Length: 144
Image 1: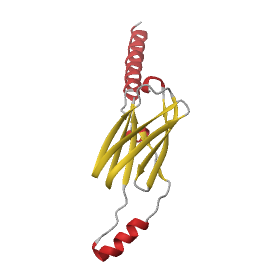
Image 2: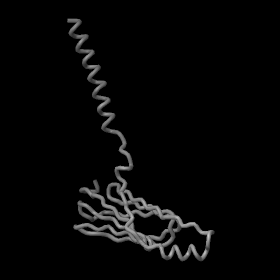
Image 3: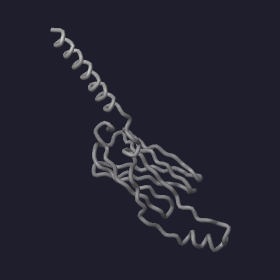
Image 4: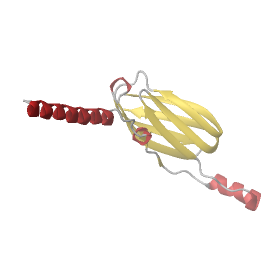
């Protein structure tokens, strides 16, 4: 009887450790890279920049703009660096779309709400002057 009770006690303790480690793994914080929208550059011209470089000679260095976009629940966050001017954000899908403008002074940040847009796959297009960045993302039901 003592051996059976001891064996049952050891089994309960071991199963409690396994169960608690399983719970810890399901509550882990996910990496932000899962929410990052992969953007690709669609082109643009460099004529204006080339003319400007000839004008100022070796003093000016052309820096490429950096654009990042993240989706989190029911909003898209856009970050722009190394750019001055207005930025146009277009979110286009088969079930609707949105447009938004914001001004960037070397660095800018904008949040676009997806409230009222249906679940589905959307294309995001960010236009900075002559440069266009594009990517796709999926919006789930109720922002998930």
